[in-house]
Image: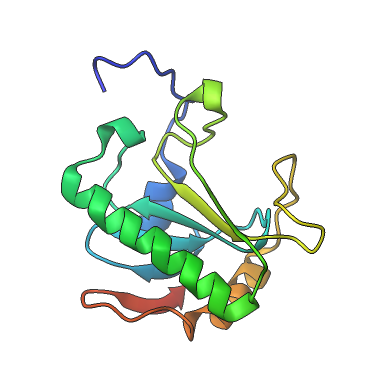
Amino acid sequence: MSDSALQLPEADSCAFCSYLAGTRPYTILWTEPRVAVLVTQEQRGIGHLLVLPTRHVPTLLDLADAEAEDLMLAVRDAATTIDRTYQRPGIAVWQNNGTGAHQAIPHLHFHVAGTLPEGGTNLGDADEVPLTEARVLGRELVAQIPQRRGRRATTRG
């Protein structure tokens, strides 16, 4: 990202890389060679998931072509999983690059969430659900994950 004007959030280490390495507890819904899907503890919608590359990639501008293809397929499959599980009237997908766009963790990730009963998603401050509750959400979702070659669809964390 040497030619970009984006400013990234400061971080001593990457939380997402720690989750993927298993050094910090988190609920991982599925993994693929280049992509992982996590159940976030900040539930801003119904079945809020995070889709991210397994390689540390700071922003969308740093993404390799093969990763971009795998990431978009996983975003689609995360939306399908939420739709099958919770049957929401809408699904929101969003992604932020740089602190000016409110990126909080300097590792590319897409948010995918079913809409709330009143519509939309909570984009303000959101309370974190306990890890045990995120695991319950993962168990609800895992049966509805579309099958694709190379995917390990199991919840862990």
